[in-house]
Image (cartoon, rainbow, N blue to C red; front, side, top):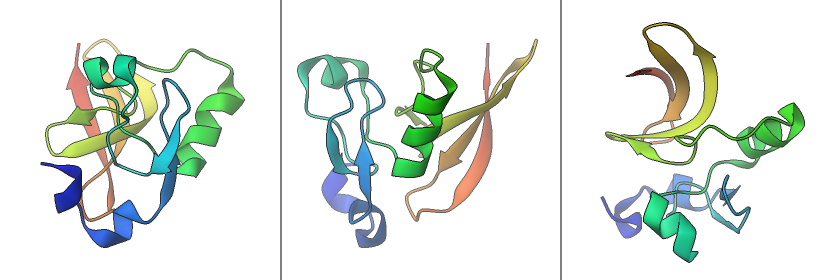
Length: 100
């Protein structure tokens, strides 16, 4: 899915890349060279601020697409996988498990 096909409501929300902190529209692909190689997308400001407040290294999947969903935060981890808060292309929030 290209950024031009994202719903207008999502593209109009500001966001930041979790890797390089480049500002832009949430859910849009970051255009910095390293971020393009890693497939990073910008995440909404509240999720970006939460990552910065934890002072932990950002999970490498935050800001990337897991299927049709954009991973914006890690909710927990266990023996079977990691649970992420994800947004779909309509801006709805869901939880998704990525197996280890």
